[in-house]
Each structure stands twice: as C-alpha cells, then as structure tokens.
Amino acid sequence: MQSLTDRFGRVHNYLRISVTDRCNLRCLYCMPEEGVQFTDASNLLSYDDITEVVRTAAGLGITKLRITGGEPLVRPGLDGLIRQMSSIPGISDISLTTNGLLLAKQADALRDAGLNRVNISLDTLDSARFRFIARRGELRRVMEGIEAAGRAGFDPIKLNCVLLRGVNEDEIGSFLQMAMEQPLHIRFIEYMPIGHADDNWRNHYLPLARVLEVADSMGLQYRNRDDMRGNGPSDDYELIGGKGSFGLIHPISDEFCKRCNRLRLTADGYLKPCLYWMDELNVKPALGSSEAMEAMFRKAMDLKPASHEMAAKLADSALSHIPTERRMSQIGG
Ligand code: SAM
Ligand code: SF4
Image 1 (tube, protein in one colour):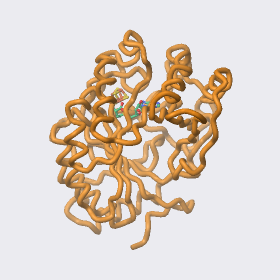
Image 2 (tube, protein in one colour; image 1 turned 180 degrees about the vertical axis):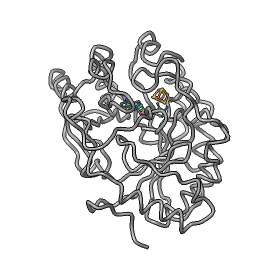
Image 3 (tube, protein in one colour; image 1 turned 45 degrees about the vertical axis):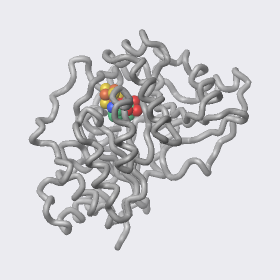
Image 4 (spheres, protein in one colour; image 1 turned 90 degrees about the vertical axis):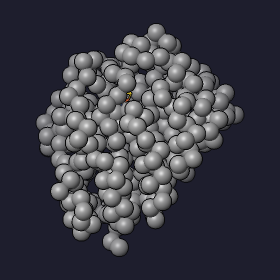
C-alpha cells in the first residue's frame, strides 16, 4: 500500500468526517444567525456510504478519524456509525467534536460503540455570554455534557475555545485557572475567516500570543510540550503544578500547514484537501468501487496546496487560490 503523500512530502493519516451541516446552535463565528441552506437529508452520505469511504481510506494509511458537523449529535444513530467504523482494520483512533448540548444523553452509548476521545466546544463560562456567542442553547447543558463525558471514561477531555477580541478575551485567565484545577486540556483557537472574511472576523480576530501574556501575568509556570503535539496543528503546553494543560491553534499568527496530515469529508460527500480553499472532490460517483475511491484520495493529494493564506487575507494581500464559500458548519472545522 502506497501511503497518502502529497506533492510536498506530507503523509496523511487523519480524516475529519462531517456527518451533518445542521446544528442546534448558531455560533457567531461559524454560522449566520439565520442559518444557511441545509443539505437535504437525501443528499447526505449515509452511514454505510461513510463507512465505505473510511474502508478505502484505511487501506491507504488513514488511522485516525474525527467525527464533526454541524453538530454531529443531532444526526440520529451516531453510535451505530462509530461501531461500524471502529471495526475497520487500521482505524486506531476515533474522536468527536461536539458542542456538548446533547452529550449527556449519548456519552455512554458513544463510548460503548468505540469512540476514543471527545473535544467539547466551550467559549465562555458565563451563561448570558453563551447566549450571545451561540445565539441559542444553554451553557448548563454543555457543562452537564462535559461532566457526563468524564463519567463515561473519556480521557483526556479537550475543550475548544475560540477566542474573540472584545467578546471573551477577558476569560482567558478563567480558562487557564480551570486547567490548573481540573484534568482538562483547553485548546484556544484563533477565529478563522472560513466562508466569510467580513467585519465580524476583522473586528473579533485575536492573535493567541495574548494567552501566553495572560498566563505570565497570572504567574503561571508552563512548558511547551513538543511530545504532546503529535502531528496536529496544536502547540501544546503543560501547566506546571496544574492538573490540566492548554494548547494554541493559531493558524493565522503561526501557520501550521507544514505539519498538515489531514483530509476532510463533508456531510454532502465532498473530499476537501484544505479547509481554506474551494477545491473539493465529489466522492459519490466513486461509491461502489474501491479503485475509483482510491483515485479520489490520490487526486486530493495532487490538489493539496502548500498552505492556506489566512494571514495574507488579514493583511488584504492578493491570494493564490479562491477561498471556499462554505461556512465552518458546512465543512466541520
Ligand atoms: N458543532 C460542533 C462543535 O461546535 O464543536 C462541531 C463542529 S464545529 C464547526 C468544529 C469546531 O470548529 C468547533 O470547536 C468550533 O468552535 C470551531 N469553529 C467554528 N467556526 C470557526 C471559525 N470561524 N474559526 C475558528 N474555529 C471555528
Ligand atoms: Fe454549530 Fe459547532 Fe458551528 Fe457552533 S461551532 S454553530 S455549535 S457547528
């Protein structure tokens, strides 16, 4: 088996799979308040279709999967998909990114089905602010989801926190304190202009160097942990004397593409070589033929660009390709 290696020598072993573009929230950095045109259920890849794509991907060296959305837990029967995928030879790690609202009810079933890890999105510890950022839902239910994930035995539990200038930057200290006191890994994420590069993004984008400034001002001791990094985009830190840790995902202020090892499959069946650019390949015509599906993955490798250019976008410089028009909820993050 020849591994999935792109023109720049990057080996791909990680597939992010979106199972739906629907969501029970409308986070202000992800989806417009009025929502987007959702994919008709008949145009979604079925769980059997997804399993077929994963079987070919596993034969090409994909070992790690992440289920995402939209909100993946709004699609019924997700534990069934996880059970199917966890029995595929070569798949060694299945994780989930969720907003946590429906997790309390499903955590045990997901764990039983073979889910290894969860990331739960949490941008604020204040319920009124939660309503402002997510526009719907209740913070209390997310906190219940985090507790249920712990009880179900997920370890580590990672929390994804998108930092927004003027909205939640004053909570960096509270999140760091949380990681000192609890065995949680807080991943701070820069706001990316996916499907939009409007005033909302320009006004609220916050470079993550701010996190280290806050940690220093609190007198926290931390150590960069290259060994925690794996080959993902996160720059991870151990908090000395603390129970948890934190990580920085800073695509704009410190581009991570040199280490990129991932492909994305959208809920409507498109393979995306890069989160940022518009190139995508429709896998539906290849269903039923593992040769045709393998050719899709090889083509995605050929289309894989050297990097995104979000920093150039921020500087209003010319870009080399056309950015995607999909919003993050239509790709999966
Ligand atoms: N609904 C699930 C959730 O919120 O965790 C999964 C899908 S969501 C698209 C995946 C991740 O992308 C979340 O952690 C979310 O905070 C992040 N995200 C969404 N839009 C983003 C943006 N414009 N910039 C940075 N991160 C974003
Ligand atoms: Fe939904 Fe997740 Fe996007 Fe928020 S970030 S709107 S929870 S898909």
